[in-house]
Length: 381
Figure 1 (cartoon, one colour):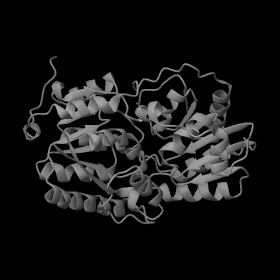
Figure 2 (cartoon, rainbow, N blue to C red; figure 1 turned 45 degrees about the vertical axis):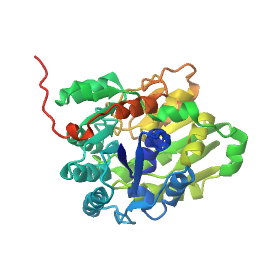
Figure 3 (cartoon, one colour; figure 1 turned 120 degrees about the vertical axis):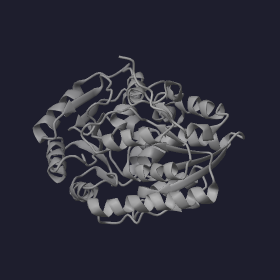
Figure 4 (spheres, rainbow, N blue to C red; figure 1 turned 45 degrees about the horizontal axis):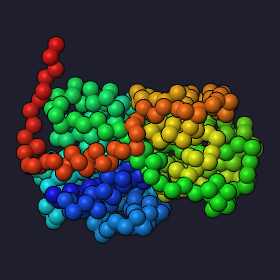
């Protein structure tokens, strides 16, 4: 079976790579990997290099023309280029199935091409809810264009079925991010700190802040976060870059300026999987609004300060401390997180064996083309 997989950001790559590694190494499959989105924009070379260093062919690229302007109109045109580019690639490679993950606009463009080209779509992480971002609508749209669904929780499975999807095609597999937690060799904290150029400190924070795309005050929210972080001057900070959503450039500029005048702090556009998970294992608190604070961080028994509405609706472990995007609320949540004992936290997103479940489901497909014709399954009242 020929599988065309598409990755558009370091976030979806981190979740896709355990599945793609198995597909690449399994003689039952022929894997074609398409690179697009954030991987190809200026400054995104680290994530592209990480994909190549992991042993994947990166020759298939779909350039969306992402640059310094992240205006919504500009990104609409970029999504159209994703649709056109993936459509051309489908014509060139003729896959049996298209494999995608998540809820970003470049993936919406990707599946639009798949739908028009009559290629069945397998979707990871449908059925989640994130009410504070446009990702929520994008994710549900991708679900309805997809024929095969690999979801993280039973609640997500119920939502996908509620959208009329055939129950036999909805598979609860957990989060593939936990496969990394189980498998990836971590860097010793002392060596990690040397690599990042940091000194040992009383506390250490890993900070990732993305635009809440339904909010109109993204710069103000970032400034509130910075104000809260200034209340902890003795903490070592690892700040990662934002994603390629509207408002991301402003966040990165504000964070880089903050880090430049903050001792014992570093800004990394992309840490790569090994350094990122090693940071989760080394820091005292994860701070921001990234899904990783909910997906992976609980498996490291590290508390997460989850800011604002971006992740509203997702399942959350007891190690997650919600707060508003105001400096006083963020500060209070950090204090609570530092005082918490998260040892033995139960992660609601699975056991770290999601990729093997996904691959076995794909391997049992006798007629992928038969997935194209869908019927709406009504829920009995």
